[in-house]
Length: 228
Ligand code: 5RP
Image (cartoon, rainbow, N blue to C red):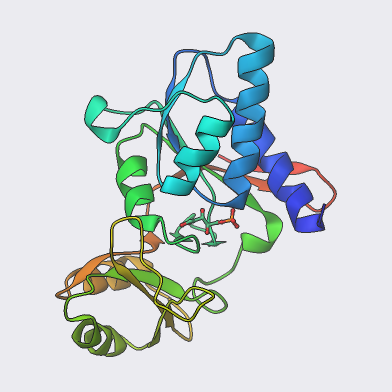
């Protein structure tokens, strides 16, 4: 296991241990979240933990089924007790970039329906300023995507259409494209979030502003830190 995975797994296991029987969960997406599912499955087996969760991606739904975790759809719930998810970058104000796995639109809807979004990351994801290293994902409609890309460019970035290994554009679970947008940095995430989402053809961008609850950071050593 890589040192990043040691941190991811440690953080994920602590998050899964905060889950209580009877909870309805938002199930995030990504490699860190898979470790949450692994631990939840252990607790279902060993402690008869009773939970059900709304998956934020087709990938998570498939993984949850394999782990034997009962699933719910968004239409079946009013609210969720807790959402757990990873992140690509987290700044000192707990603002985040998400969407490395192309799932940020559903992740934001699910997080907004939860009493708390519990974030699980390894220490490499903590940054001083968002956007210096990670490209900001923006989900856009396929219709008129070149026009949307040009409009997004005027916000100060270089957008790049995300592709799969074959070179074809990646299609999200919602049937759309992703533009990965390179900014020098994102000093005002709230402003950029609103600006991007005001552009025609933009579904949602990967900035999560003021949404994170507790953040659990797993270190390479396997130790964990919690930001309340
Ligand atoms: C998916 C996400 C993920 O939470 C984010 O990309 C982190 O992924 P990983 O845990 O694999 O590093 O936002 O859209």
